Image (cartoon, rainbow, N blue to C red; front, side, top):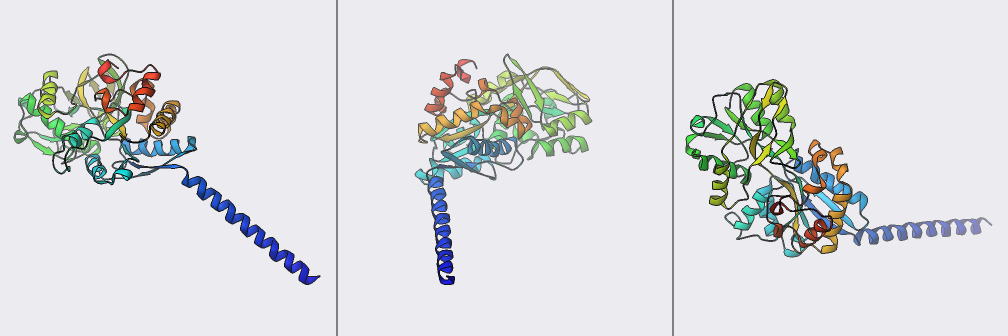
Length: 349
């Protein structure tokens, strides 16, 4: 009897172990059937970074066939260059998170350190228009001539966005040799103005809505600055943006923002260079995958606001409104947005 019980026990354990192995192999097989996408999220704490990680989490929650792994990276220009160097099959399943059409154009032009023109990225969706006005505490700084000899902080040393802002100032009549540019982001700009170490800084915001002048809200660094100090906007003429666009070939434009009071600061209607933070995919990413990504973003757009303040200003009508021509979007994304009756930027979105 004892031997029989022991034999039954051994057989039972063997059956249990076999079941666990079978279940494990089933899960592994199920996981291997998912399409794995790698998402390059950009620099930590940027809105594009946070909302790209949000995209990964939202897609992984709502999709039975797509899994996204998001990761922090050093910067968007470096991401585009690294994307170009990937083997084709690996590159096809990458999502570039948070960079703007300006960074993509930098890759399309193929200038060093790029390995020739990189034409493969296609827009999946605009996250948000993020205008960045030049801000000062000195109300006498209004023209290009006033800015000569001033210390100005905006963007990274090799940032394509900063390069565009340099081009706007040069078109306005202020070459880079006539002011001191300090690399830095919105937080450093706010700190520099508050402590008096810089004269002018670009500040971040999120904008949305129809009309020439959009509704907008400042990002945390800008709101802290506007609440602490009375600030003034420096507003280059619209022709300076057009001239910079013609010279550089970059999708440079001026976005109008409505007059607004924040803390101690009252800003009039103004224009600013926006960073059109967007998600990008490879032109050869299968159409059914692109359609599902667009569907999840569209159907669950309200979830992004739970992750970052900028996500609260994501709008259905803005998804196809990145500052690039329609053919820069993935063909399946074009079909999806057109099926929803949405317009692209060149169509007057």
